[in-house]
Length: 488
Image (cartoon, rainbow, N blue to C red; front, side, top):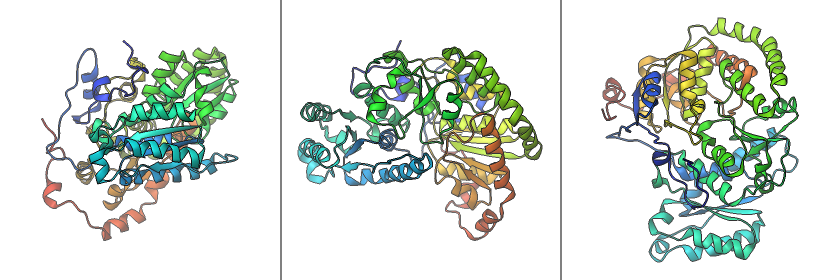
């Protein structure tokens, strides 16, 4: 049964659609076993919760980087304050991508106030859409909803549909209120649901392009695909409304992170006939080989792929072996979103290191394509063995600090800003790399291995920081079991 329904305005949240959870403590192998067959996971609840991610921010993450679109946050102005980080991200990475004419981000807020929560904000939204169109002349407008808009029950879908007829451009309602889902990743799905529902059009003809669903990583796919006669079509960083509209004409779709792209990959295949690579992204040798071979099979380029892999092995395996000798036996801890966190664990194991545990922000027991080949955690466990102290948590930093204080790994690897602070304050070398493509392929193993080695060897700063920083958590808490507040 298809999990994608583009005929409804609101995407089904991950708790319902995929059975996703945010509470688990055990080993990675235990979690993989719990997800096998027909088993259903019961989410463990926390009697104390410190912080959560917001779906609105993640929906904005998928939409703000579209070059010629505008974003309207329908809610209090405070709900739009997190969106400035994507404007910064766009400027930095547009420079790294060497875009000829990077455009200014177009981010607006309806600025709902107390009186609007009483009388409704629909009129204010109508006025905002017209004003944004007048000022910015975008090719599409996305209206992302906040908790306030959801609580007062504004009919955002009717307002956007009327505005679309009036202005003659797509005006897309994206329902991503923070209270809608405990899974911050449901915000990704909401953004991509809006794109698939209102932006993507049926294919006119097939072209030699491959859709890449990613955040904003470096342009490694251009070199890889060029050897096979294709070029990447990035979704959504630096895309245009036009390039998104005809992503249906691609030969296939690949994902940098299954957590990010699970829904859109399935939507492109089920609704527009664009096949997706089912195997997990190419992190680690085993998964890189599987990924490239599936790519070659879909494109009918098996011979070219084998030649490419042979060249990569010849060039990079000596460097990988040298790094393994230097990193053998070193310990690490990972904190990241689900799929990318699993990929980082695979990288560590591939480099001969010993992951002592992980704090992963949520867990999807299945994916929208309903194919077990997309299960990144299962691949990591089957390829490299179990991971102890495997914690699924929605960014509960009090648990992270407790665990790090106990196990004291040689390095902390993080994917999200702000998390490395906790390792550094404990004197643990900490590494955050924002480029999700940095570790991909054979060259990615070398990239990450060199950075890990450099970070471990240059630990003077974190040692000094630990001497002069205070820990906000009490000795009482640090003496407790890390998962004291996680239901049994």
